[in-house]
Image (tube, rainbow, N blue to C red; front, side):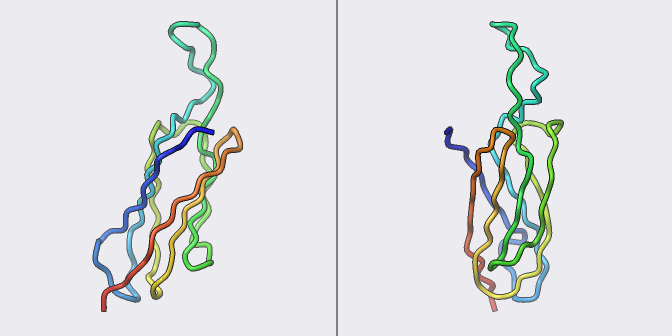
Length: 111
């Protein structure tokens, strides 16, 4: 299993309890459609793309996303959420090969 890098960013960087924030989830992934030919071998590159994403905040699902192979490589997925106290935001994604990856951050409202 290849190690994939991902990053969760909250905007604004400083937020208070009760505020709605923008959550960007960036993932380094090739997002292969299965229709591109390798330039050297002329063989089709197997499909390999993110097909589902789940955002969970303090055990509560914020959103589920279904993704298709037409999304570009290294995609950014965005959602909004209401800050409801300290806790953890976890984003889990699965790709078309069945690999599952997870990234978490601590939510710490100011004031």
